[in-house]
Image (cartoon, rainbow over all chains, first blue to last red; front, side, top):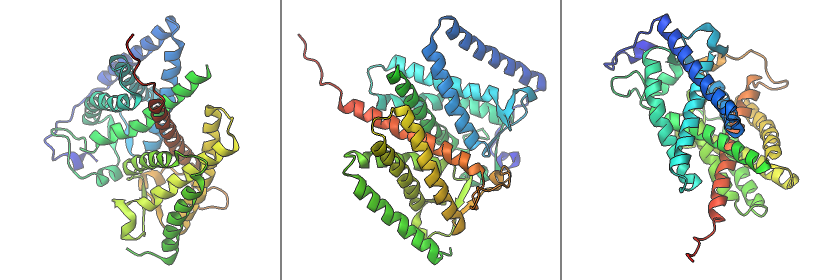
Amino acid sequence: MTCVMCNNNSVPIHLSDGTILFLELLMLIMYAAIVLYFLKIKHWKTIRNLLITLIGVVLFELMIDPLVLNTQLSSWSYYFKDLNIIISFGWVLIVSVSITMVDFAFKHLSDFKRFWLYLCLLDFLTIPVEIFLVQSGVRVYSQSMLEASYGAFIPFTMVPFEVLFAVPMFFALVIAFTKYWEGILDANR
Amino acid sequence: MVMSRGIFLFEAFIVLITLALLFSMRKNNPKLLRRYLIIVIGVLIFEVFTNPLWHNLNMGAIAYLYRDVSWILTLGWSTILITSMEMVDYLFPSAKDHVKFFIYLLFSAILGIILETIVIVIGIRAFAPEIIGRFSGINIPFSPVPIEAIYYLTVFMALIIGFTRYFEMCFDKEQHKPVKKRKK
């Protein structure tokens, strides 16, 4: 798999098992701290929205699971096949941060315009993380996905150029799903 | 590319049934075309980016939009979704949105399995090795469709229905926005 990507002047990142474990624990502590903070201040709506986002993200991850493999992470962090809690919570965090920041900074804009800003911010936050995970071999693209790509890569990386567009497009479906459920649950209260 | 008579009939059927259903349903929903367009965009996003997982083979060259993404199948999936949504809105007008969501899913998943059966039987659908490796080998009774398709179809439909309803809500909100308040 990796050889397909070797001619891109990209430098793989080698992470030791200890470094991976450290990063996993760091991420888990951060996720737990965020959830505990909202539980402590009894911000139930945010907890509910995080749960809806988690459902959207897990559905999406199960769907594209054969395209991207999550490897090299600690065995305890996998919950189904190669789906991993660190990665899933990471997506939830990125989606939630994108929505919260845009909603906070651009309250005056219509929902439609804000939707595009969610996608731009999400792309901006995701791509460096995706590059890091791919370079370090934590995320591995399937052969079919590499064959379907045009063969161009983001400079100095192993990440196909299409990922720049695929991430926001996929998340357009996840964010719309999340916002729809938030909307109807708000309306039912 | 070899296109059998069965595939040609299938393509013609999808186009005709789409036109007929859109024409007949337009009276019940004046915003039908808007809904259909949103569904088509959602389905296309999904099809283009999951394109490496499933292959659409043996259709006429004119049926393809990008690689093996076929606009005929996009129409087929979109028509299934809009028909399910319109049927549910018509049969259960007073049901709450979240209840309707699950009935939309049920209707569209059943119709989706029928379409998936047809495309497998006539030789249009093939799966990538990565996805075949994840199949259990068990098929839906009386069909060649792998049992896992129930999950994939339901998730696909859930994401597209959420996408469609969200944008409908956004556009409706825009339309009903009060004109700027006059300064006192």
